[in-house]
Image (cartoon, rainbow, N blue to C red; front, side, top):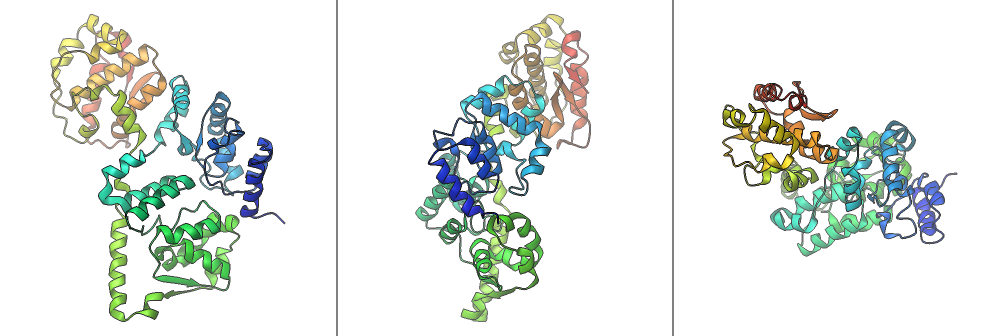
Length: 440
């Protein structure tokens, strides 16, 4: 008979704090464990390449500290389908490993010299992160929503869980729901029991079934929303949690009862008031995605030339661009020598003393700058970061050392004819080499 996740977890931590044999640790992790925090605190294992495997299997954050770990991450990317098929019974999100990487100096330096454009694009497109204290201070009036978002994204690390619990206690508040749960579902049941009542408001509903362990688990971990709709979600719960917590949710779904605690203990008016509060809760929960601080935006603020005080690039994406101003085009893109200087020196175009009148001016200058970076063989990672928002809004991408405009259904900008017009201008200057870096 195979051991439970909790038994495997005990074996794992006994080994981790004892001999700490990487092969033995991976062997145990592959059976299923609750990894409560990242492994970088453990000196004996933190630099081993199996940190990547163990962390991905256990859906936990990890650091890339050396070339072996970096190459191990690339192996996971290359063998994505194999990894998913091998470990999905333990962690359904095991192919979302890029979101688990903690960004550090070493990882950034490796990306700067990375040549695999698909790998770079995947890293950039899946990264989200938080500067916790700054984020809390900026949005302190929305503390419950902010903490919920942090718990959804990072609650798998028990240090983050304790951080949020401290904020809850200091603000004398409780969280209404963490995507339908009362606690992040990454820990053993004893840990879930402790944090659920500490973090979240008490349920109004209670699910009864014949399996008393399962009954306790469901009422501890699930909010009213999931308990009310248990019949519709029991198959999903079975796929996610049956192996981890040794519960047959399918069997429970065939025979259970949901009771309203308030109806037993209060009068009808109080019940109606509680139902109103539940509706208000649901309305509030729809806004949980408002508070996002993404790494792509932060990187672009640091290195995007538009942030030299000329124009806020991100804030301009949805504006009507106006017609194209040909002053810059006539002065710089009709003259071979000036185009050649733009191409050979990326800093040249950033220091031109010109007045930017609208968004299209800004975009043209940026595209010229990107062409210069490509020509001078700058880091593909830097180019991918800079073009991130252009791909998101305009379907402008970086492929095969070219800047490509794909006029397809993707992209969120409705004035596509302006983008095509700009590309036609950039592809038909007097400088053939410069023109070759653009395609539409």
